[in-house]
Length: 115
Length: 113
Image (cartoon, rainbow over all chains, first blue to last red; front, side, top):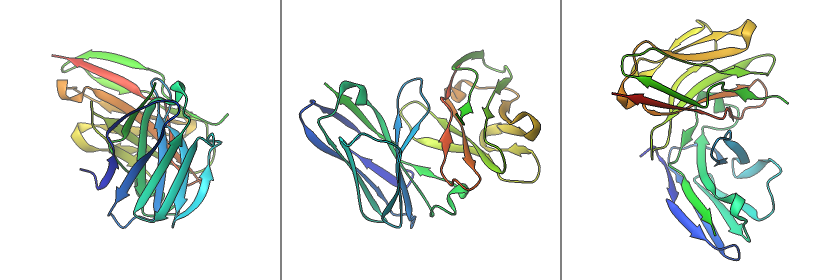
């Protein structure tokens, strides 16, 4: 375990479903990130939170809705997804944005399949 | 567009062969550079990182990387690979003032016994 825990590990959902991905860290970090990992493409940064405030949304479609209730928890709410949204969704954390260069800790990811 | 480029998508080697994976970036100014590894079914792990100082950086498991500023490159090397090095390797950059990791597309390495 890395200290960043993602649940569920695998998720299959229909295009009309609503589901949520959860990320939890107890490393004392204040910055949290969602990345999308698709085959043969660079990891795509989706959202950034620093001290619970969203600081970046990289033109992510509104069918993805993040939530950060506190510095230890990060959610990604999903609704009316498309098959092309199938991917590995990775959560990461770092001390905070200004100290991010010292390292990110990644979770193991949620493998999402949209059918 | 500014980016991180990894030249090889797939590399196949025999055990004991030498490895070099290319990484180039297009950001000017100060950069922090990283190599991550993702073993099958596992999370991304940091292999090594460069912030400043000696451009030859040594990481875990016998890996090293050399920062060549004039070439905007940060190639990963290992003199003799093992079967257990089979994994996907990602180069990543934090451009100065941006504070977020930007990844390359990854290189999938398969090492045959």
